[in-house]
Image 1 (tube, rainbow, N blue to C red):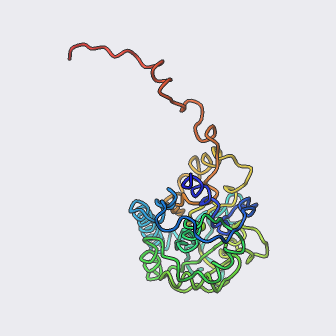
Image 2 (image 1 turned 45 degrees about the horizontal axis):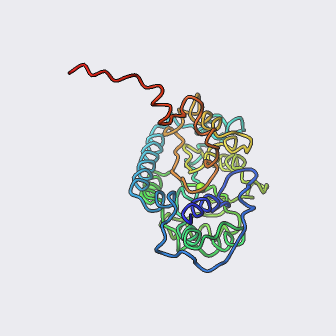
Image 3 (image 1 turned 135 degrees about the vertical axis):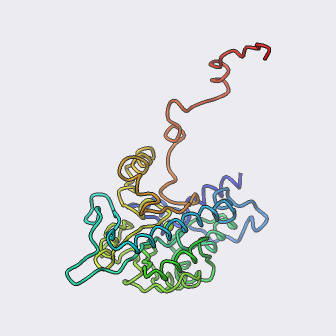
Length: 312
Ligand SMILES: [Mg+2]
């Protein structure tokens, strides 16, 4: 029972990192009870996978290697230099030339921060160990003071080093909102290098809105940089339209996996795994399993053809 409760609580955590336009997780109650389960309790499945498993580490390294290989390859081909698609239907939706009247814009890759370049182990530990859930107050404290309790996403340190060595600037576009200094400290403490607010680090609000939407900040970054790739753990790190609250899970999945956008994955857009929290986690059983997929043993026994023993 506790495990089930913890799993649901984990989905509420880190709402400040969400890119959703209206964040329903903000209604979560805060609490400051002393740890009730502690270190011997089973961690929630999703946290075991993301923060504890070799599979997640391998998955992340795979994405980071692919990203660095892709961006370095683009940087070496001057003829092919143009920005990647950013947003859908927005002002930076289509690839743009990197040339300006005064020269070529510097190359950049735009990264989300939380669960893309660093893992928020300290905050998630507190959620898992105590049963408390996300609150603005505790998240604000985390942004301001949690820098030494994070780890880099596996593959990120090497990936960012390779980009910088190739002359490509990492730019961070995060929905953290309380402390640019704390975000820069966390990035540095994870071994991911320097991040300068409003130059290579953009927080929620830096585009003059209070929204978690990122298209506006992507446009701001694109004024100065030729953005050749995007990376994130939430589809809103690529285009705001994915995180429309009205978009049912199946349509969101269809949008990501069909047509023009499908060819961007691994080819300019690079996604990192995150089953712990975020806009990916929605849908009823009926929505996740459409008609035609609802098998059961009873279905099987009534529909299975008789097995003939033909002696061979
Ligand atoms: Mg994130």
